[in-house]
Length: 287
Length: 120
Image (tube, rainbow over all chains, first blue to last red; front, side, top):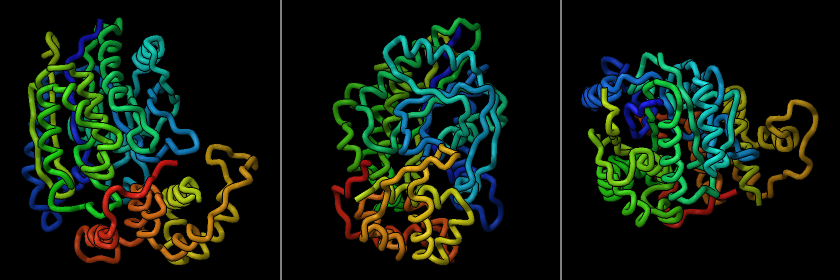
């Protein structure tokens, strides 16, 4: 059976690549601290010694569009091209390429469907920065096969928050039942409070530092009950109009498990949004 | 009112480098051409099969034709699409990093919660 080597939840900040690679006058003052934190965070995946990565993210209107919008979609392809023209244009992100693990994709789809999740699938998926940002931060070699899973946190109507948690729980169970003797890391990215295209965007901090403080506490302590008690599809508009990205953090809390404290927690208060990094090593999973 | 069609304009222009420049230089002409030629194209259909019913109303058309992103916000266009496309067109005109993004926020500063509905 497969081993869940690590569960990792993170923000995905498309400016990291440019900030970390810029030099001289172009290098922002916060870059060195950011790189140091990312380097330490990367070590939490490296030490787990994974063979395969499951990557949970959300397409930002690249391949998935309002004429045909899935709520939850599993990539099932032998390869994935990655990053798009407008991400190259706005963030300076490089074009990337990944091998897929179709065997694990097929297992997640079959077992997930049988467990009551009507998952969509894609046999030709060009993935975007919600998936490539954690690869750049956590595994820049991009040398491991992946299974991307997309959630809709972007285009209402959305599923209820508890459904993201349930999906995370299902992903964990399904990966653990994969009959391959391989080590799988499950990595997902979302947002804390965030405003995009609204009056509170690009402030000196995230738009709602109090929400961020509470959210980090919920995640770090695995307090799914409190998160579900305080978060609703309606309430998530208040901390910032793009804060529904927090639903992917809730999904990852489902993967990690109720009451499971993170083995590694770190944050970085940046302009525009707070960065947050969490790693769990499920029992028996640590390298 | 069609938030979907507003979004479809923003989405299809944003992903085409030539259309980004054309919309920056000639917003009204680009909107008129797009509504006539592109509004009813089904995006994953490569043949001539099209939709027949998609049109802007006058308010939507004028907001797009005047680059009026506060009005697009009010109309419920998806804020991520608006922001991304307008950054592509106008960030270059500001000397300071994030200069355009902060101007964008300032021009929307009269909006308070709840923001306009963006569901489609």
